[in-house]
Image (tube, rainbow over all chains, first blue to last red; front, top):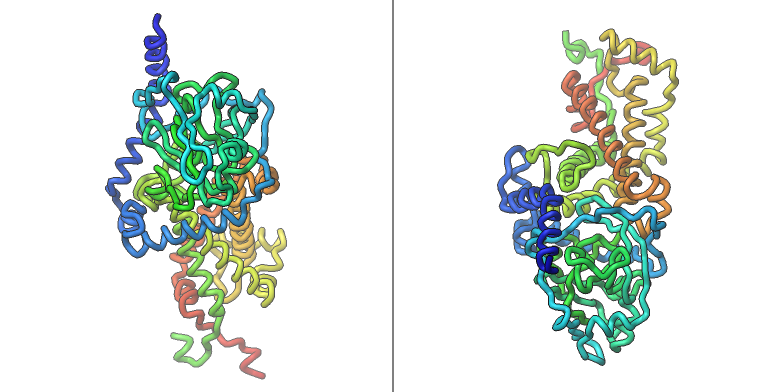
Length: 259
Length: 215
């Protein structure tokens, strides 16, 4: 069987596994369309869907979320490590998570893939997988906590983002590190979180190269933040002082989302 | 015969202004926390049920979380003001203590036999215990909520609950306990509606103590 057929089989199996998740995603999209019944319908309009230009309550909720960003930045201790776990506690199977079903996982050709480096950095030469793998790697077994509430323990290995940023001569006093992804997802971190010793550009998951559904070929792993702050399939990393926002953050998820 | 017409009653302040203001702010905060919390629960249910959509606040997960993390400040800061007042003014000691098992048993059996009269301005032992439990549940909700919000930065607190996943369950159970209290509380308000008036005006008419009349 060809590699493609194998992949197709594996993904269709995966699709069956995550069927309940898809139903939930559809329900979420349905809810976001504003349909709601009952006594709370008046307030249900206040759902951030119109962003900072919405109703008075929407604007107040956005303002509170920005205030919570500042509180969390203050609470964040760069020396506090996320708890680590023994290999026996790793959860399998690990849940697939994206804003789309697994059929839409981006197809990436390893031969042409490269990581663009931009913004406030000295060396903007793109990186190949081979070069990234040649850098010193760190491994961690940490808890991935989803904004939905569930959590799973997994193992990620890769290049610490701090050493990568130092190597490309990034301005470490810049406010943000931004990421762009092959699936049009995007995200950003505050610089202190980007420089945290456990924040890595992960190449491996569970001891093998990142499988397609977990962010092949390169993803961010930030165990001090909620899961959606760790973009998958990244194709670009940049340092900047202009808030790059994020796919979910721009719709209303709290930007800092530290844990 | 109306007691006031006979001139044998007087109006007294039974709920100081600060207690009334913090009570109603708390009611709003708890309303927001509960209904947004149920929407958050629905995103990844711990148990084989979800809360009905009409009983959720925020519309979608992002909206619900925004409500939850905004109302938490109202709940916590208002609770802090109330707790400081309650401790410093001895409001807690005067209103809710002592609660002995004997007194609780006596008042609980009387209540079940429908023989417990409501003395306005004074809590019976069942009420005292119920309020004390509600305060403890509020503290537990705040602490377990902090552990869920910051399981890395506040990992000592999270470990106290047995880790992140255990803290989720503690948070849920404490919420359930508080909902039980609220249902009991609202039922009693419906049975004795003048308590609602007293929590708004702060004042209630009580019969004049005959001893006091003589003096």
